[in-house]
Image 1 (cartoon, rainbow, N blue to C red):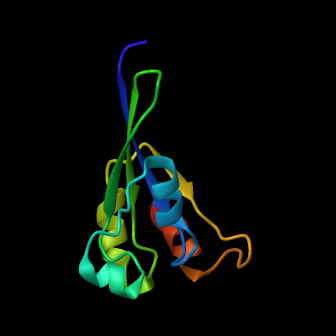
Image 2 (image 1 turned 30 degrees about the vertical axis):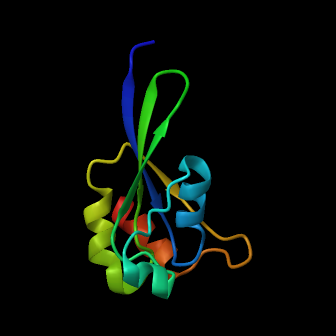
Amino acid sequence: MADAFYTIGMAGHIDHGKTTLTKALTGVDTDRLKEEKERQISIEPGYAPLELDNGIHVSIVDVPGHERFIRQMIAGVAGIDLVVLVIAADEGVMPQTKEHLQILK
């Protein structure tokens, strides 16, 4: 199989595990800014590479989930091939979950 390149976006409500899931898949903490570390929320889109054994190269875009950062979320989803809509099992669908889904539509 020839090399293939894809971009996956992680979307969903704040504190539903997008950054944690991205780190589990790639080993990369996409919250790189000092303010993101201090506040424990994503403010800017974060990027992480994922190389699969079958020649597939994936770029994961972890977008902010907080309503105040919706513009950064929109900027982060341009050009994606697939979205993982992350929903925390203990909270279910929340306001930003619905907003992200509307943006993706």
